Length: 208
Length: 208
Image 1 (cartoon, rainbow over the protein chains, first blue to last red):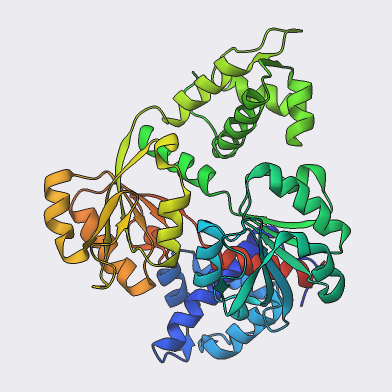
Image 2 (cartoon, chains in turn green, orange; image 1 turned 30 degrees about the horizontal axis):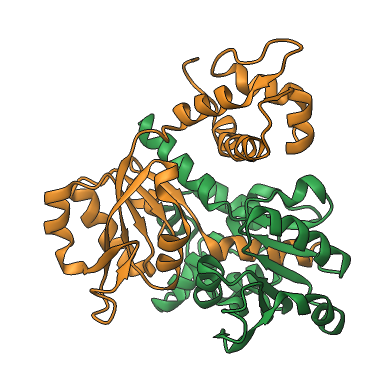
């Protein structure tokens, strides 16, 4: 595997993973870059270039072995190693994420859920009781979660993120509108800014 | 307003909108590009360039009027005009989105919710009963929704999206793993691929 993979290739890897998964479900074991490109709306040469970034998979004229290729992508994305993660904020969106996302498939094991609302504390989500956010410090000192899913209002997100970074959390899946990277430029963050996405759709509709 | 705004500027507009909203909540009426840049982690010249794309707001030495600037961004994003939208798929993530997102603030008015599950049909979400997906055709012919929020498994998403395009739906907020743009390149789409985002976080943790 070559040293440095570009950001745009990394962004495409999950899409490849998904498409290969669909092929496997359909019982397809081998696919040419041409077929894959038609299915994915990319050029065949783009796909060949992407895959060349991390080694030799295809044989000219034989196409790619779906299973081997997917295993390599799993390896590059680090999905086979489990990282522990907590979910902070189990309101509508936090609960939706907790129940909808199959974290284990994507390299994460949820070890705790937290909320500030007394009415939520003790409720079972993801086969775990929601804990009071006041126990966050103690929990993190004992269990050392590596990542946190932040589903909080912006003010709470700012406070809790700083607290979690102090407690050793290294990566954030951020659903809040707090821009973690502004205050913590060295922390790993993936943002899911739903409102921004919706505003962009509004822009597209207006300027269609 | 100049003719063509670049994609990267458009992507930043929702962030500006959010930051200006926070400033208003804090009672701040005027801000310099320098202050705004510190708060947002962008360079001041970047911000000036972005704002110059759509007209003259700042006066040298006086900074920007927060209210006027936000109103202009609202105008550019088209948030003041309401587009009708339906939500298709009201499982965990669809319900979370329906309950969590303030659609009216972002240019959308939800006029219908649909699911295939009999156990969900009739339940109230967003002050509306969930309708049976079998009534989708009739509903669209009567109400002409402009946009659809797709929260369905990939196979269902493919079928329903094609059906909705035939019924005149022009824009999709896509939470499914179905890549709408591959089959329908001319349709307006904003994708929220949550699994892809989580896989990218896994990659960052592995390659930190």
